[in-house]
Image 1: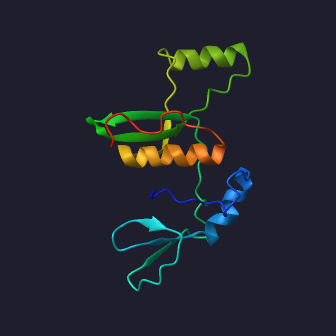
Image 2: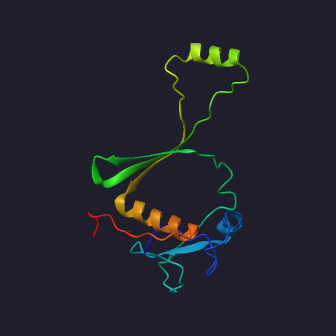
Length: 146
């Protein structure tokens, strides 16, 4: 079973983004001793419970740049999320000043999140995002993942 937590209540996978955060605080997933995640209650005394804190999104950052890089092999990857904003140019003079100060015309990306994912976790994330966005994945498995 996927370790990506379903943050929408049952039957509400088409809910809007505003429904995501109120649901986080009440979303509970049970983690079994063997590592499999489920929302079913087994009554197993070795069962662990995972819960998102009510303010899990308090430090959420806007991102508008994404980079994905293989981590040496195709067994894992790095997912980088960042934000970049263009220079404020109000007049031709502002533009000239900025271009003089930045002859390479390069804007630095502010990294807001860097994540290491196994290919299996990346596939789980892709499936979860597709489900919540109402998209269909035509090829959900990577060729080197069984």
